Length: 218
Image 1 (tube, rainbow, N blue to C red):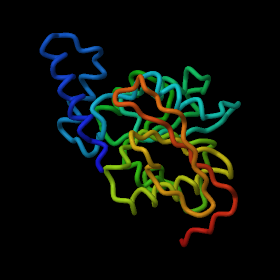
Image 2 (tube, rainbow, N blue to C red; image 1 turned 90 degrees about the vertical axis):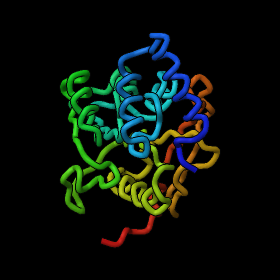
Image 3 (spheres, rainbow, N blue to C red; image 1 turned 120 degrees about the vertical axis):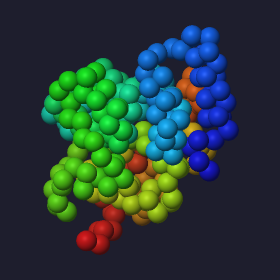
């Protein structure tokens, strides 16, 4: 099932009604909506994550001195803002965003963070990391995973786990009842309570390696 589901279509209609009545809540929503219309499968949702969902996602990131955090698919920066409000320092945050327009917006809104334009489904290539390079203390993702085949989702999770120490979180939201990625052996997953104020309601899935994962073939 696609993230761009019937509830998303209803949300899209609501957004257009607001546009017609000049009651659009923010310029961010307008930019997000326009990008969704131009490329729905890449953008996934029709609006940025709500503040409640963004705070819930950020709450799973332990902000310690010099902790390095990687954010995937930040869009207009809802979760980025929540991470910084939680105390994360800008030089310690790297984001990967596919849309050039959103990259420009992120650099303007959050000077000092590292904005990488590229494909978050190919982490090492996009970040320019070799097989044994790079490690983050948390990865937080707003990617529309259910728009991708299961094999691509599994590969992303495996690559993310390789960039995290044992027990560190890979945080992902979803509108579905089941985990957006079926965890591999040696990876545990837990779900938050539903964030009912988000449109549509969502919850947060947190994946952590238990230390018993099999080595990935190189």
